[in-house]
Image (cartoon, rainbow, N blue to C red):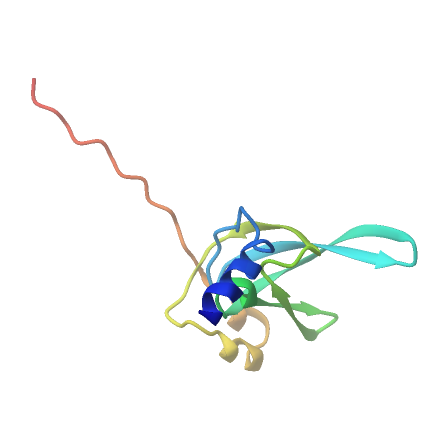
Length: 126
């Protein structure tokens, strides 16, 4: 009973179009930043190293290197401050969490690219 009530309340705040991205992919996260009475969009580009949660509580962690220092940010998927998430490239990984990237430096942090294959139409015999 209580879970049905929670789902009904949360359903109003869920985004209709959630971008499709996976752990290991490089994404651009467009965040809405408010400074006083002004508002601007700031882009945070990095590799998705983790996804966790479900429903309104779903979050993803993005990691990037700024001035030789690793920076990680956790973004709620359904936050109204997230304008959009643009997938730049997919990463081919074998883990659900890429926390091991925190210990790596330079070229060791590269991930293989996930290439999308398109199904070839079957040849028909006439």
